[in-house]
Image 1 (cartoon, rainbow, N blue to C red):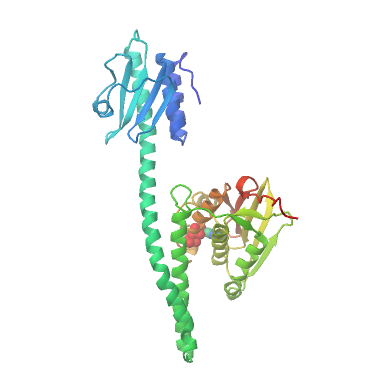
Image 2 (image 1 turned 90 degrees about the vertical axis):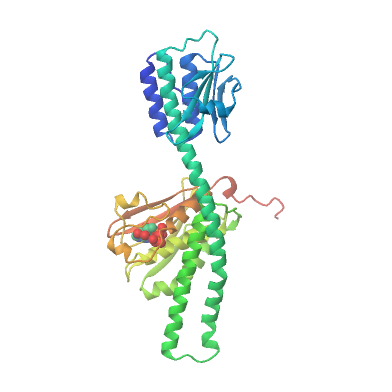
Length: 381
Ligand code: ADP
């Protein structure tokens, strides 16, 4: 990214501010601001020193000749003691964010035009650095929340497992009458629901590509086997809803080198949703095929469908469609976030195609390249 400031500085300033308002990444935006400041003032170098101890430099930026804390107390741009380094504090109304410095020639004239231009760029830095610092705070918060969730879900898991085990065994230690049998069924179904929720809360935290701490373990994954196994565990709920559920894997789908635990969790969430959001007596297809250099895994239903408006936010954490027929179904809004996280951590993506009242197909892709490829074993015969 580069903007030429020599011809029409105001226009160039507008261009820079537009780019930084729309570009999501911090470093290229700060570099653009520094380049623009250096080009306009003829500085030999420029630097941004952030409060988080990261420095971004363009050209030959001199070292900051004033300690950071003193620079941070300045109200306006000031030349350092040597007189060649313009120090510009970068702060928003709440706090200090950093300092921009420009290495200038000794005969540089710091007139009104220069002052206005530099202050506009500093305003730009306030936006970018403020955004970056908010993102950092968010990530810190998410990390501590993830850690908390990890501990809580770990502690919840063992009592849930023993509740399930003992409820399962009740019928073995003495014959249950019909009502007792029904009550045990209800206890078991409650335990299964809480376990699924705990799994989703835990996975949404640890799989999150930005703040999760999950370390991927790759192994050879046969999608045909995986999809068939997952679907067979849903045959009873599908039968209860009189749903037909098919698996269709194209012949060209190869074995991939992926994290099977993550894939199972993503596919399970999609199949679970398709069953939950499809009325009785219809059909669900679980498919896999190769398209544009990726393996795609998709789950097609003939259920409620989702409007284009509701599709926009669907893969974000905690988002549920706010319609009566969706709210009737129990859920936490974490399943699709997990699907997207699993796809992104394998370098792919997740998406939905849907029509209201007709049905949806939720898909995610795993690119057939890099670590996802199975490397042929040279020693194999
Ligand atoms: P939830 O636990 O609420 O199902 P998800 O993240 O899995 O969470 O899904 C988010 C929302 O997307 C759901 O609340 C539902 O409204 C909608 N949705 C997901 N899958 C389907 C589907 N197959 N058909 C219709 N709506 C769906």
